Length: 198
Image (cartoon, rainbow, N blue to C red; front, side, top):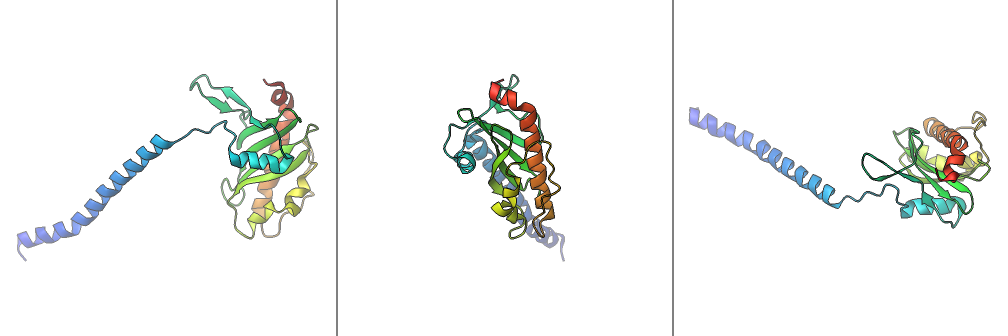
């Protein structure tokens, strides 16, 4: 085989992957540019999904996300009291109800995206699932009222030890328990700030 034939053969084997790599880089750059051009920051915005979740727990109301002005970015950001996993605090000041929006690990990392509602006494009134990415037919069973309904009336300081896990969904059940405890403690510690508008 001559040197020219070897070069031609190598060129034929190398060119397709090189061309594909270049195409992938260009398409990735275009996707990134399109995302940046169309991205809408909905931080602190009551989306339809959040509103529907609030109404699922408390019915119709005048719901709003608590925000504060971030001095560095100049943007309004949701109040979270620096609590890991808490996305926002939503209130209906007319009724004295509060919902904590949070994301909690279950079997999947961040598999539970919840709204946990508290009445004016600090007791859980209901739970709405914004989204769930747990194992279908197992972990997703935590969204059945027969399980989450056991948390209704739960307050900060109460124990979740007496609440049985969903069969074959230990991690998802533990995630739910951790989420409820975290939300109840946050509400209890910051109730005055939440409703005082500070």
